[in-house]
Length: 109
Ligand code: FES
Image 1 (tube, rainbow, N blue to C red):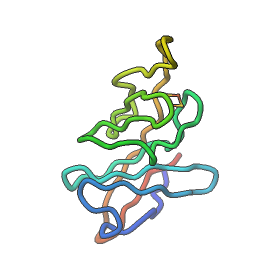
Image 2: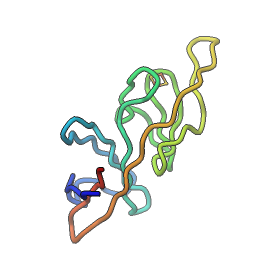
Image 3: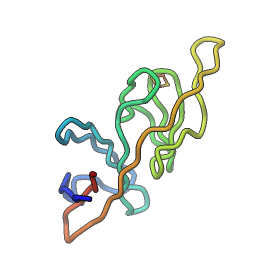
Image 4: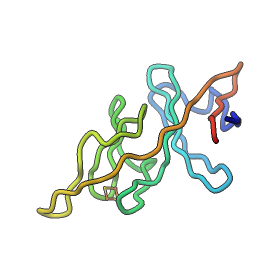
């Protein structure tokens, strides 16, 4: 696995998120209690940008239909709805993250 620098630590402060494009991927980087996480930014349902969603602790809510994802694992915590229809949304992908000095690195296969 190759670790690639995606940002510097001072660009993503505690409680903040940042969107980055890396090759063909768009990743959401979060800093929650001074630990960094990375997941695919695109909601697996219909492509909502999770960067535009609300972040509450580890929970990120898709701005399109309200599915909630865990920023640490990419797993769906709560499925969203379209009017009265309950959705069955897949998990989004999570990537390993490490910090070296002031650099945030994401592991890609
Ligand atoms: S696009 Fe995210 S829940 Fe529909």
